[in-house]
Length: 555
Image 1 (tube, rainbow, N blue to C red):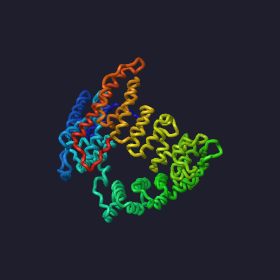
Image 2 (image 1 turned 90 degrees about the vertical axis):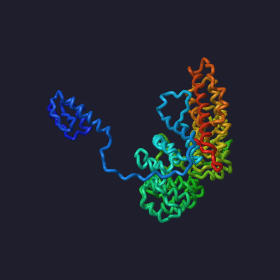
Image 3 (image 1 turned 135 degrees about the vertical axis):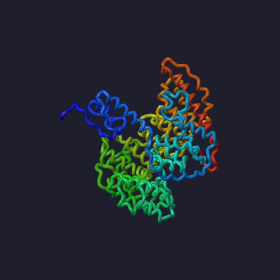
Image 4 (image 1 turned 60 degrees about the vertical axis):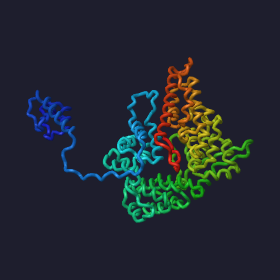
């Protein structure tokens, strides 16, 4: 390439990009535009000054905003929100919560509560009482929901129709239109078959998904027929999303359609159809899976103690693939164990007592399993119990919370235990976790606490506080309990605050304790008490719940 030291004449556009380019190349190689916007015949020594003059003028232009333009049509006024306004104290509290953005605290919070973490709980309580959001808080609410997807459902419910009105005017808030049923447009009623058919044929994808869900909630058969009518013409990724809507109200009448979906050209669609069919214990697929899994698992009575024996499949045939078994095992996983797990997971749990000698689920789980197949078999039963929402099998697989294997590397992992707990009612779930903490402490309890209903029951709250106190007195490394302490701030019943007053003083540090641990524990307990009292004040400011409402779940 030929190089030349002669200046290159710059275009006369005077655009900001040209100024940046000239500054990067240097005025000895490119002549800058003048401050008046035409080529500057300046001497080389004056060129840098000309560049700075042009940049100064362009900066003023850029800061001045938009060029004058013909007036656009005014938007329609925002729709009215008929809900009652917030009490004045609650409105002030909301403004405080929204002002506490991430990064504004500057490092360690000390004894100050994390207000943004209380926002989900406040929103749930306000929504349960049916209040409307103050109009001046809507931008901050939408900004908060933009940054945290977990806030979006509660924020959009609280913000109401005005949030959608604002979202149409600001591209940063378009997520509200995507999250709203029908993209913010009104959906036809379940009996308006003409409008339903027209929207299904001509609507946007988000509108069609919302429509299918709305019809499914009132008329499951009509939603299934709507989907069947256009199934062959839908894209694979759309078929997957539409098929997922059948989870709501899933029943035996859906089986013929799902059986046809087992032959779909998309592997993901086939897998979802098979999963839905396996959740129907009376389906033909469930029966096929029960036969396959039953052929692999039996009880050997020739030994002194009856023992479960496992003979995993030797191949994944076309029938298994059609019924949703994925043939290729993940890296590091044996093919035969991979196939076995999928068969047992999809087989109805009700078939095992008859297959294994009339034993109850608890007796089956207690049986020894030959050749190190216990972990694989129990893990598959865990997935089946979660998929089929079978609390009896879940209790058997969970076992006693105080059992030694519950707190260690047993056949059922902590992640699997957390999922199993989700099949139990809230009270039983809390009692099991409280027993686990009392026996094993908090070091492995974080996942289990995360599935417990909020506020924690009194026994569970006492178990957590007692375990934290024991850890503090033992001189344990305090920062390892910060996750549990954060959960306690959001989930402990505020009525427990008075029980914590004795833990606010810094304990004497033992010689083998972590340096500074006593001060950290005192600070953490002080923050916990302050947060609990703040949560109590938040509830009082919002007023009592309507008599026909249940207490809101808190985030």
